[in-house]
Image (cartoon, rainbow, N blue to C red; front, top):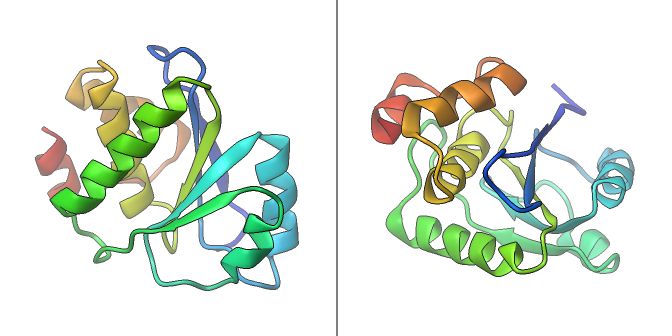
Amino acid sequence: LGRQLTLIEPPMTKGIRFLILDCPTDSTLPFYLSELKRNNVTDVVRCCEPTYRAETLEKEKILVHDWPFRDGAVPPATIIRNWLQLEDEEVLAPPTIAVHCVAGLGRAPILVAIAMIELGMANLDTVEFIRRRRRGCFNSNQIQYID
């Protein structure tokens, strides 16, 4: 793994974008930081245990939200609520929200799918839209949840 970034630009939004990535570490963070800045990322959501110091991003005015949940699972209601609240706030001033888990194939894409469904895209269309851009994402449990 390493340095896998996928920009998701939902067609039904007014500018909000999502950047799905695999898990940065302190040693790879300079690469990710340059990509976050290049894509105008305002917030990073960590869906896994921390592998880098959040302060590095916060010094660059990028907020880090620690919302971990079990690998391969769907997010609990509290994380979904926090995620949708963040996405709602950001729609007012369209940014890019980055989200990552370990590989960027399960937890991160499911949050992006939830946001896109809330923004009006049909459930399974959302899965197809994201999978066309990030091959191998979603497991059967996550697809069943979305459907």
